[in-house]
Image (cartoon, helix red, strand yellow):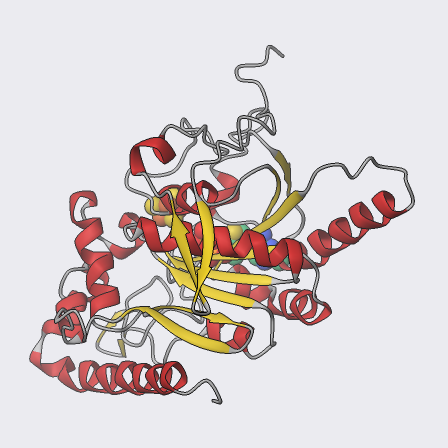
Amino acid sequence: MERIVSPLTKESQSPGIIRLETKDDEILLKGFNKRKLAAMPKRILPGHGACPGCGIFPSLNTVMRGIEGNVVVLFHTGCAMVVTTGYPFSSHRVTYIHNLFQNGAATMSGLVEAYHTLVRKGRLPGDEDITFIMVTGDGGHDIGPGPSIGAAIRGHKMILIEYDNEAYMNTGTQLSFTTPLGHQTSTSGVGPGERGKAFHHKDTAQIMAACHIPYVFTGIESNARDLVRKAAIAQKMAGEEGFVFGKILSICPLGWRTVEKDSVDIMQRAVDCCFFPLYEVTKGITRITYNPEEKGNKVPVIEWLKTMGKTRHLTKPENADIVEEFQREVDRRWYRLKALHDNPML
Ligand SMILES: Cc1ncc(C[n+]2csc(CCOP(=O)(O)OP(=O)(O)O)c2C)c(N)n1
Ligand code: SF4
């Protein structure tokens, strides 16, 4: 077959735009320039088969802006994988691997160790650093959390990114364990016998933080500066210390039943109602990186829920008890996070 685009070189992936500086125990991002970063060649090319407005690729491409040099990626089964790998084509401009749904972290950690062992034995040059990045959906983290937790505890030098679109989108919007309470999916219906998902969402960022890995972060694509900074720290930590986990809330207009032009506002409300707080955990120390209360932006959860088709039923008076329960749980998790932020000993 004729090659349409060439693979990326290390040089083209290393524009040297951003850098990190440490000041008073805080890691600061320097040189952030949206125009320059946007000109960086994309590791995932456009022209793939995702729906218009899909949040996965702007999210992943923003993460990639913070990461310089050669990258190897592994994608779990899910929309991100399926829409970029329609045989015989590929949207990936870097070395790409796919293996069965649940064992991505086992595969990637084996590859990381093989690479470092071959370098140590002199069978590979080892004259450049490679950043190993695994990508999974939230469903992949229902089916494959065992290998992910195993890889985290073993401390392999890799980054694991979970894009959370709150359901199994690729197979038809079935609920995942991160689908929030009351949200409608194809397996949590709304009607006389059911009022959306019946139980609260799983908190993967906290599960991974409990594995005592060097760095955990959350992010959204529309807060690009925050996400690029966290990605740059993730690369540094994965190169020097060990396993890193990042969770990104990612909009799915098809499954959330939203209109693309509203995406940025919807995602911002998810953050501003504290459903999806932006924070990082560095070697056990939690730091909230955007506090909607301090900015005067905090809104009740209903302000987020009313923006999506999948939660429109929650605006009806007969479902007020679900909204109340959801608000209570979101508040509880937010207060807990603030306590962690305020007290490094927690
Ligand atoms: C072991 C296994 N079970 C089920 C499937 C079918 N399957 C393919 S993609 C998918 C959903 C993936 O959901 P998620 O990880 O949330 O990614 P998304 O599709 O939302 O991007 C499922 C269930 C599979 N490929 N392998
Ligand atoms: S179904 Fe959702 S997650 Fe999948 S490609 Fe479409 S918008 Fe993206």
